[in-house]
Length: 232
Image (cartoon, rainbow, N blue to C red; front, side, top):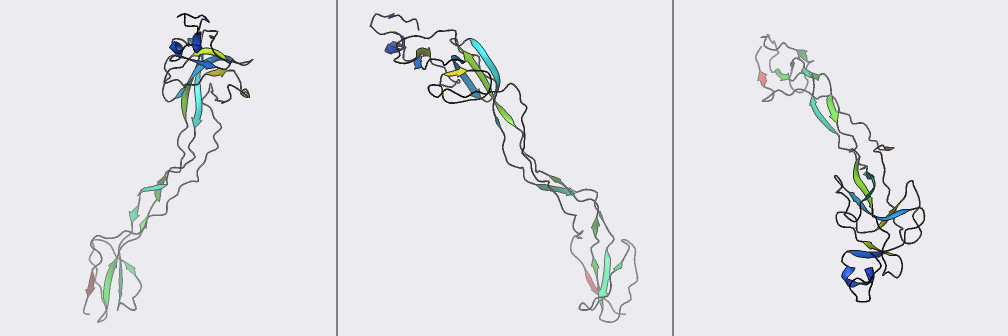
């Protein structure tokens, strides 16, 4: 980038094929912008600036990732639920009599007309409902933005613009110019806008409706009910 035909082939800087591997022609930086420079925009910590881009212009936060999805609602196990005493129902099966409560573990005398039967029924559950989870939005994540400038004035050999070193991966392959503030990009040359921020604060309007769970159901005795037919 010295503007001199160093190898005597009549070609200077970017016009010389010997330079094409590491240099490129870029537009002349517009008024009010610094550069050209290189930009890292990716996850994790940024690598240091390239050896030809030694001016550390800015390190901050790239475009926030704000997924607009809600986590699914789920219901946990009932907490503090108790089961009422079992009950007994008697009758002929087609015309049952009212249900009476019985005390678990205590024998009771049942007097039924001939042909009647009785069945035991499960007690009713009571207590707190199941605890809901879910219905939340994922956290906001950020890419890292790192902007590096070069201590150079640019070389020759370009029909328009200046000869400039190519950025190396993981930096973006494009040349960029920088300015503080939310500005519009030039109409030609450096036209693709990228924004970088010095704070993680955001205006987050994402929201999910609240999750809820119903009350616990009945307590089902293991093995199912037993039916007994008794004589008077």
